[in-house]
Length: 194
Image 1 (cartoon, rainbow, N blue to C red):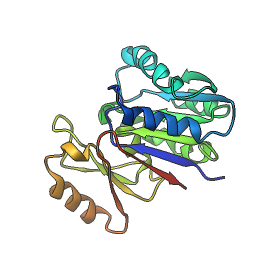
Image 2: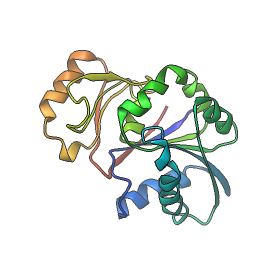
Image 3: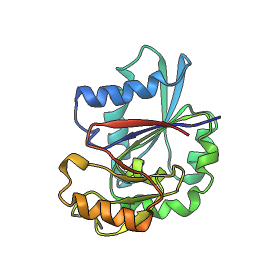
Image 4: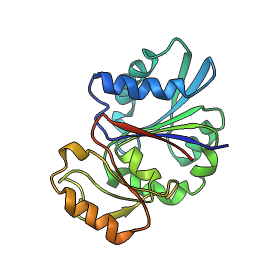
């Protein structure tokens, strides 16, 4: 079974019609009345996870009359256990330096996502890509990073506010000319079934 990926350019923290549409799309893709969503905030300090979940849960549930339940993945083992019963995995944005150390343990993620919906915002989009360049000057934005390669794409998020557009496109073209480059503005998304 294919996985449906909904990849977002970032900025889910604000209230906006675009963010509503992102979360509504994710719920509408699940053809059941009872939906379980696993939330993943590994790109943020652990002490922020509960506050982030408290912020995001109503943003998701207000988009549907379906019964939605949530859990938060604590680590890779916990994520894989929770995905067995989940319909959706949402990986929120944050800092690459916090989430990239998890990558070596996520080699089975593609298999665990089969038939599910994957929502990724910013770094959540990057991790399923094959290559990406970080978006903000306070991170390593001059290096091509390697995602999990679940999707055969290179990705750039926060595109509408990016200051080094051509430089980053050139970096990705040099690193992996065979992969298409997906450019995602903040509050914009693309849906990929793969």
